[in-house]
Amino acid sequence: MIATTRTASIAPGKSTSALAYIREMAAYMKSTYGVDYEVLIPIGGNPNRVAMSTRHQDLAAFDAVSSKVRSDKQYMQLMEKGSENFIAGSVRVSIWRAEPG
Image (cartoon, rainbow, N blue to C red):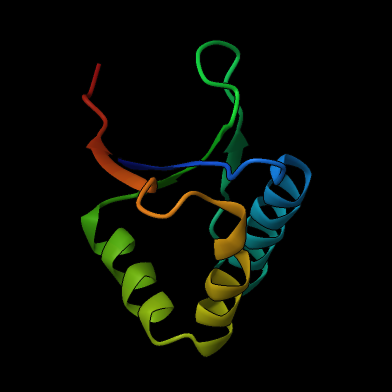
């Protein structure tokens, strides 16, 4: 199982629009690619952050979605539209492998 988390710092005064945008992106990914993204907000530390997390069966499944997204014009337009909600350079992506228990 592959888990990904994408975090970003929200620009000043953009909390409401940033959360609406992240929910829109999560809905788009679900309807277009069948990928469930969980929207996360912090309960401690800097409150002006947001994260999206998802899981893929394996690296091949992750790569398949990633490849499709890179050539998806509507996705790229959504990314551009939402950029004003976040502090430039604050996006961090982590990719994890679940350790079998």
